[in-house]
Image (cartoon, rainbow, N blue to C red):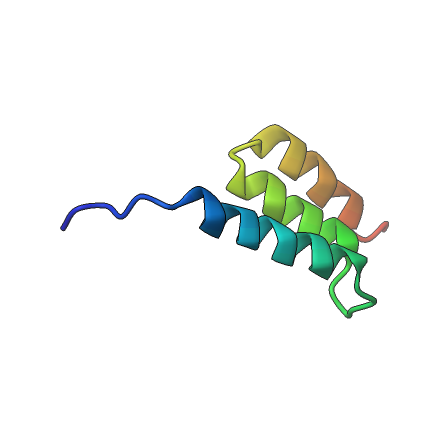
Length: 58
């Protein structure tokens, strides 16, 4: 099966949706959203650093 190429409009809509989610007062911690975004951008070291901030202090 051939890969479908994402259009610039679709990517723009996804980015706007994510920006709206960041601006909303929601149950998901902004650091969790940031870590997910970094993983999607293949910025693994930065994502792991953000995840470290989410770990409980013992």
